[in-house]
Length: 187
View 1 (cartoon, one colour):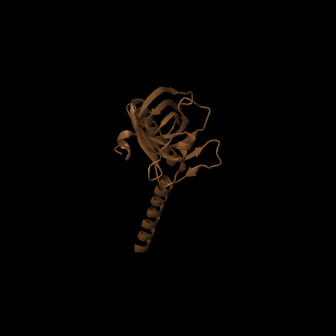
View 2: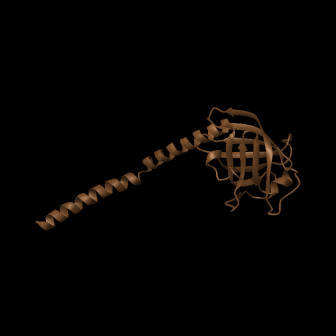
View 3: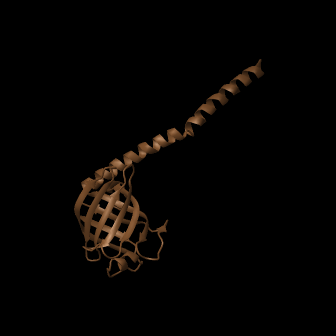
């Protein structure tokens, strides 16, 4: 009798465990949760973009027209913090050669502050947000085109020498997050 109870209890436990395990590993459920998270990230990024208080955290970059391949997974995070019409940043020194800007600090990276001017913000048919802006400071003068892709907070930022799309371009890719959620907002 005890063996039958134990066997019955074991079978019930195995049955419910398999149901719970299959729900945790259900690809449809995982995709649905990812879509919900991505939509929430996009909505927050879009709102912060429109409010003018956001941070672009780059995860890799490349330089167009150069032999240098894209750099991924570097230990230094490059960023641009936009707070109204002011900004501060930390960017890779190689972009200063491309953008024809002098001066790199002792760490090899360029930190600085500048004024930001938003030229336009548009949404395309696919729901991507495109922002054109100008960064102007003592150590940077660049036109920047940023595309926030619909469905998440992934973005691409193209830097051009100010008022000239003819010469070099530096492309960073990363994420847009609200200023209040970034660790770089106070630096």
